Image (cartoon, rainbow, N blue to C red; front, side, top):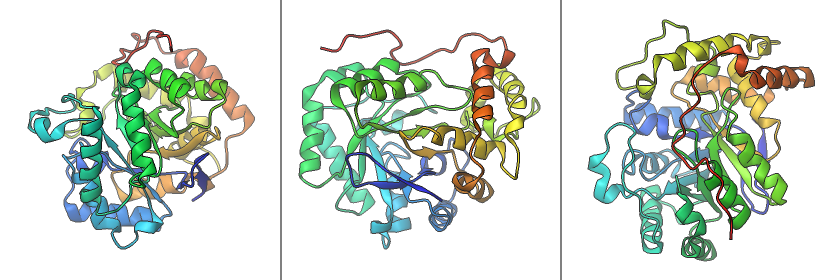
Length: 342
């Protein structure tokens, strides 16, 4: 494992982190508490120090898992969590991955942070993220004053945003970076789905800010692990069952053109992480981990042969032509139209 430091913070994180949504929401299969804790402990033993939860994952369950897994090793891990969804009043309304109401008022952010601290059984959150903010929150000074107040009090060490769901939220991300300069932006980005992630990351470079990035959906919901075929069937509760079949069929066609990345013992899944880590603004990657074999593969990715310039150029050329696959344009849920920054 290798490690990177967040700029302008004292946070050092593993290049491969662990996102707890896979083991706490039921969207990637069902895990007993013992199975979830075992996977977390294996991740720690593999050198993973960054753990990304959210208060809405399992209505607080992901944070409770972290308290149980690392209560005696708190100083050896970096805990990131998210607030913003009002699951206290609306948690029972959740159906699949459909959103529930949000509340980003200063009082709600304070309450949610205090509740997260109790569930985590800790006195500080290393990285607090606003979960799926809209443009309204980007422009609301009270939101950012609240985060700064939490930081000054020592209850959080750094703050940022997590963008989504789906692939959208281009201008929420770009405007937030330009106007607020958050320490961290978490967003979707991978070899197959480079828009709008590339533009979001470019915004920080163009603005000259120190914002760094956590990358989720690193393997395009599993496609870039290289194991899917047109005959792949997902378990009944798996969130990928909600995708159109064309997502799987077109994705398999694209992945087959990336097999040249499998060399010298490096798997396609490891190459997908190496590609993300070529950008020094990426603090860490959050592959979807849901079994021990997968964990071992991804945790070893930073030590695999790095991608060559030729491989990077071949990837760029393939992406420029959408891997030769004709498909309907992506449908985005977030703001994908420009918005001025006052």
